[in-house]
Length: 240
Image (cartoon, rainbow, N blue to C red; front, side, top):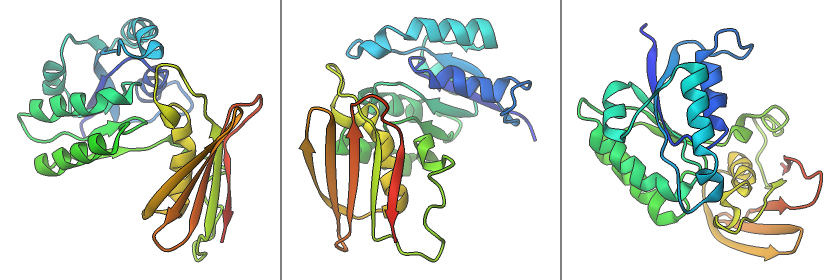
């Protein structure tokens, strides 16, 4: 099987060199063969300081350390690769960039991984899925916490999950909306155990923690606890 040529869009997150290292460096103990990051479009968001201030450094690292070709536009990058990693750290950009990806796939749909958060509004998320269906573009998005050791397998295969409480650090930033920065990780853990069907959400905010309570259509309750105190970690409690 030929090696899959991967393109990255948005070089403003530490995930970019981390993923590239896994795919391109065969001396890495966690090396994943079969795909290689060959090109990237830097992107960057003027609205978000943690994008704006980091895009140059990560761009230089991918180019100089891993030999990744840096592109000036998305359509040319899409044409030269087999699959895309949409990495832009500002989820507010994802819909517009996903639109450009599917519009540029002239030789057929190419798989797209969308890094967290998938989107920062329900409307954007629905439009992205609609575009994926219309263009038959395979798309997935996930926080790595969904598959982390210590999280996976807490409930037995035959156990029915009655409730789950997931917790993680959840800093509130001045230039980024709500829990989409790190709180998204605990939401991912919660959904991994509760599944679809949340119909109502309310949030109880405090200085050091936000408690977000979701009610599912079958009456079950799931809780996200986003912490802002020293030593806050990742995890969950599952009731079966």
